[in-house]
Length: 90
Image (tube, rainbow, N blue to C red; front, top):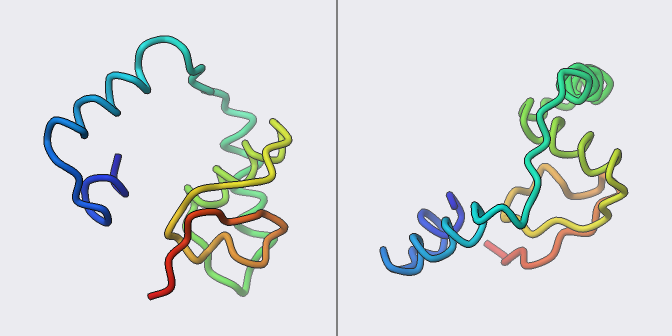
């Protein structure tokens, strides 16, 4: 939603459409303290490189779910064994 709103600046109508499509029950929401703890471990293991906690959490969840690609403008995912799709040169 942030990318659609801030980076791409889609219309209000498209933002609403995407939001409700993502929340129609077709996608599962992962809530697990174990993932959060492992995300923190990942953050500590990347030091001295400073990565945002949520990026580390996303990488941990991706590892657990065997997800190899991410659509993002965030450069923190580069060179982490994850294929970044849709990234624009800036």
